[in-house]
Image (cartoon, rainbow, N blue to C red; front, side):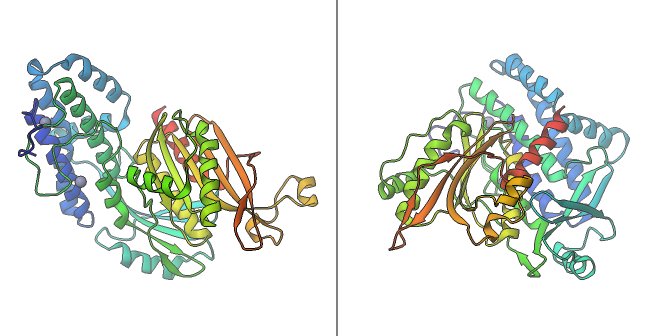
Length: 425
Ligand SMILES: [Zn+2]
Ligand SMILES: [Zn+2]
């Protein structure tokens, strides 16, 4: 960054350099995940470095523009943040009393369907065993008859049992990055002149977004493996494949004609606009992938396509999306999907229950759905039935509002939001 003309001297070089050290050290922690000794050493050092970022700032406060204001805001929000409180306590434990009480556990999650899941933990697999070795053994001994199974290695501290430690330290890093971004912007230095590290993602650029860096979210993929229990095969990790990309949007306007205006007031209001665009796309292409949009407040913070190839991998794809919702602190979601629709049978209507999912019924109809939910409990959804003319061209009917927009696919996200609510209260 030193060669960049726009780069100005860093207003808080000591704290900023230490934060960059934390970023690099976080990746180191991830690399030594299966080595208990190295993991403990790196963890001890990372916790102290995270804690030291704020001390280094305080030492310099006389020279920092607006320090009292932005630092006080940070202190107030940290006081109610369990991770930041844990960092302070842990640092005291490490330097004064004793080590963190690190536990390495193996978590096995059996997803029976959208709503039913069973979580087990086991301490019988030593931390040095790779996920591959463990899953082979777990599959041989405990393979349940259907659904999917996720096997995941987790390090936790006894004082913070609900948080895996890469997540916890990544969360603390993100809060500190936000703080330093504020400090830089108060000093009118959007980009400072600190040298980048050898590791490509460790640069001096600071994000004020409050979302975890992509490199940290993606790095965790190799700590878990998923199996389709019926097929007996590993499910390749599913992911969000498209970032918001202005060029891509411009191209699609060209291809699908002018697009409906989407209001910028969050996911609930955006449902009709997205539906109008989805119908255009469906009628042009004859098919529509599954697309998801994550929001924080009114702002769209991530969009992407979800890939899956059967019901089991679909559940995992939405579970993974739910982890991203947590990592990005998203509080709204909107989904566009092609799906099956079937009217309830007379018997089902009488009993108020559904015996057969639409996808398993002979009288199923093709439909396009757009639905959205927010963390504070709002939902909205539209459905458009799709028919085909003699040549197979798709025709999308005028959309109807969905009776119940809380569909199964949202279950993992609603569960994560409930967990997040209960841990902040
Ligand atoms: Zn700086
Ligand atoms: Zn990184």
